[in-house]
Length: 610
Image (tube, rainbow, N blue to C red):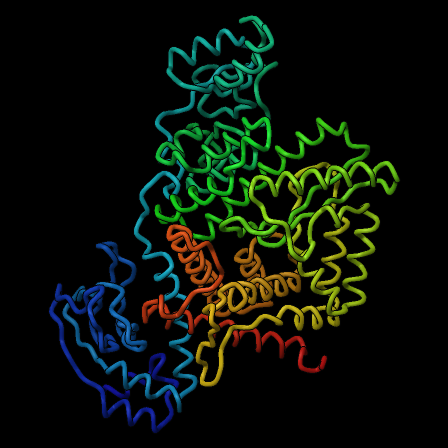
C-alpha cells in the first residue's frame, strides 16, 4: 500500500483535505529501526512526528513502560510544539516507520482545522505528564498504597475482655492498638470476623488511668466505635485526610471486606516532622490562640515539604483544607466552652477554595453560620460566636475577606438562608449571582444542623434553564487572558493564573455539575460528575481537568518560590520566569478553557441574554 494511502486511513491524517494530503506526501520520510534501537531520548531535541507502519514501539519514562504503539499510531508529539522528547522510545520489534518534520505538521494547522484539533486533544496528556513529572511511583509514605505501610496482621481481643487484658496483650505484641471483635468469634476466626471497635494506648491513658478506672474495667466501656476504616488501595495522602477528618490516630485497613492491619499517624508521617500529623497534634493540644500564632508559617512549611515530596498540588489543597477544618472545630469548641451551650443547633460552613478543598497557602476567610431558631437570643449568641471565630482565625493567620463574606455578616437563621437561596435562583440578578456562586460551594465543617433543604433548593436551580443561562453568563466573567492571534496578555504584575485559568475552570465545573444535578465536591470531582451526566464531553472533561491541575501546580510552585525568596505570595507569574515549554502549555491551557467557555455559553444560550 502506498504510504500516503496508509496514513489517510488513520487519525489524524484521515482529517486532511486533498491539498493537505499532497503536502504531507511531499514531506514524508520512510525509515527503519531494529528491535531494541533507541528512537527518542527523553530531554533530547525531537524534530519529527513518527507514525508506525509495521512493528511496535515502547514508550517509557525512567524505565517504566507507559504505552506501546503499533501500526497506524503516532509518537513523538512534542515535535509539533517544538518540545524536547518527554519519553524514551525504543523499537519493541523490527519496525517500518514514517516520519514528518514537526514544523511541517504545524504549517498544516492553518488550513486543516480538524487535523489541528487532534493535537489539541493531546494537550491533556502533555499537561498531565508536565504536572506529574511522569507517573513514576513517588517516594514517601503519602504516595504509596496504604496497605504497604501495614507491618503485620491486626491484633484482636473479644469484647468480653478487660482493659487489663488489652494492656497485657498490647505490651506482649508491642503494638499501640487492639481491634475488638464479638465474643462469639474464637481466636481461629478473628481474621475473618468483623471488628466492632478499637482500643489504643491513648484510650488507656485518657479513658482509664485519667479516670482512676481499674484493670478489670470491661473493654467495651472504653473502646472507640464504630470503626473508621479505609480500603487497602488508597494512598497515604487519602489516609491522612481520613485521620484528620475523623480526629483519630489509628486507622484499620480493609481489603475485600477483611481487616488486614492498622496504620497510625506515625506510620504515615514518620518522615514528615513538619507534616500534617505534627500540625494536627499542635492544633489538638492548643489551649489558646497564642499557641497557634505560627499556624500560617507552619502551614507554609508543611506545603513546601509535601510539594518537594511531589504530592500533587490538588491533593495538598485537600490536606490544607482538612487541617483548616480541624482548626475551626477546635476554635468553635473552645468558644462554646466560654460562651455557654448554643441555644439551638447550628452549622458552621465554609465556601470558596476551602469549601471546594482547594486551598494552597492561606487565603482570605470565606465562612458563614446557619442556626435553627429565628429568635433574638439565638441571634445574639451566634453573633458573638461568629465574631469570636473570625477574630481567632485572623489571629492565627487567616486574613479577613475584603468582600465581607464572613460569618460576622453572614450569620442567619435557616429560614432566612432558604429565602436567600430561592431569591438567587428565582431572581438571578448579576450581584445576586456573585453571592450565589460563592455560597453554592458551601461545605459544613461543624455543628449538627441539617442543611439538606439548602441542597434541595440548589438542586432545583440546576433544572431552571433561565437560571442556568444567567448563571453561565456570570460564571464566565473571568476569562483566559488571550489577545490577538491567541497571544497571552500580560500586565506589569505578570499573568494572573487564578483569574485567567483557575477561576474560569472552577466556574465551568460548578455550572456543569449543577446542571448535572451535583453540587458537592472539588472542581475535579465536579468535572467528572458533569462528564458522567453528559453535560460535558469526555474530551472537554479531560482538557479542563489537566489544564486545572497544571495551572494549580504552576501557581503553587511560584508561590512557594516567592515565599522562599522573601517576596511574598501572589497569583501572578511573569512569563519570562517560565521555560518555553511551560509558556506553550500555559497558552494551550488558556486556549482550551476559552474554547470550552465559548461552547458552553452557546449551548446554554448566553449570547441571547444580552
